[in-house]
Length: 152
Image 1 (cartoon, rainbow, N blue to C red):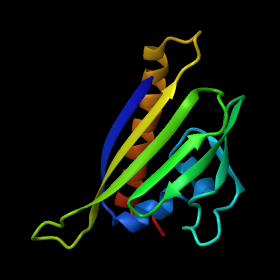
Image 2 (cartoon, rainbow, N blue to C red; image 1 turned 30 degrees about the vertical axis):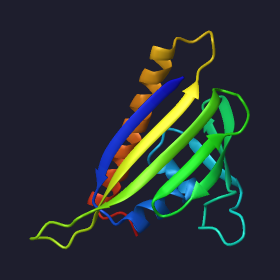
Image 3 (cartoon, one colour; image 1 turned 180 degrees about the horizontal axis):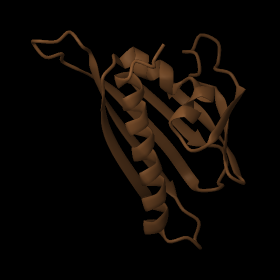
Image 4 (tube, rainbow, N blue to C red; image 1 turned 90 degrees about the vertical axis):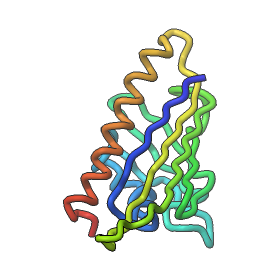
């Protein structure tokens, strides 16, 4: 089992970070993939939340991810099926951080954990390196998105 853990501080309140992460078609701003919503969330759920399915295209690799659970503090998703990886689950925990005394700015600590099994023909360390690098870069872009004020 491959485990990737990324922590990122984001200069925005938990609710805003969650909204951006559940706006599936706009995730292309952060990830090197094309993302399309193919099923909307279940009735009564957050927009883009539980029940939503998104199609991810990375070059010729295409797969679907389903949102299993979503609240302002936690987003859980998994790849449907066993391709390109198996037993995949992603968990994003959003924790509000106390504002400093000299600032009213709200910040969020994002803890992103992904677990999966890679294909037998690809060494785990290599897959972990490439997926981990993409997640780290995406979370840095997400943080920059809020720092530059592009979060309208």
